[in-house]
Image (cartoon, rainbow, N blue to C red; front, side, top):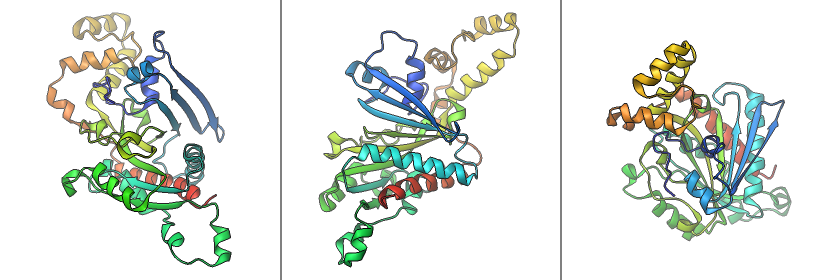
Length: 322
């Protein structure tokens, strides 16, 4: 489903909900929030129930769970352990009784902000070989609650000449999983959500949509199986950064200065800085070539590897039956 939020380039349902929250005409969705671990982790669970709400969100009807932490890129073992538990718990609720899963790490491992998916696959516990071989009776009891997991990092079309959808369809035909889990890097609208947010959804994913390189959608309609998507925003668009900068500057200005800024560039500092009007105004003044650029934090190499390990640990706990 195409999103109408072109200028903001966000893949996070939570950020779109923040914009729509003040619109009374938007109905058909709910949002529940809770916190864990002394408020270190905030969970927002958005249920998009109607076609009208799906159109306003630019997303498919379904469940979108957002886990926000202090900073996933920091070296805090206890925090990452707690986040892995939260990821495992939410995946367990979305998987239901399914026992055979295919995990797909999307992205290009040679481009750091896009390497999240392949890095997760590198650290996964793969159990399918144990189930396809003769196992002593004693070992069967130990893995009775484990998932039968298979994993692949299919690369990108520029590397293989094939759509990821085509590759996954071929694998599904051979191993017959019950559900598919896909992991991909996302785009955020707000700087504070880079490398600090995990989104888990029941609706699949459109690879590359966050950076304007949308590929074939990986959904239940296209694959014939339920698809659970896990993503972390690692990049942000230029209009989003510009809006944050202008908003920060305007807050330091006098009332007369804010009014002059408003008249000079038609940028209204009094609006909520999450408003789509901010991004639309800035986009109208920018060179169109800037829309081809995204930004990522300077510590992206270390951050993406650490975050990928946290996600893989969450999946591994589910796979092992913990």
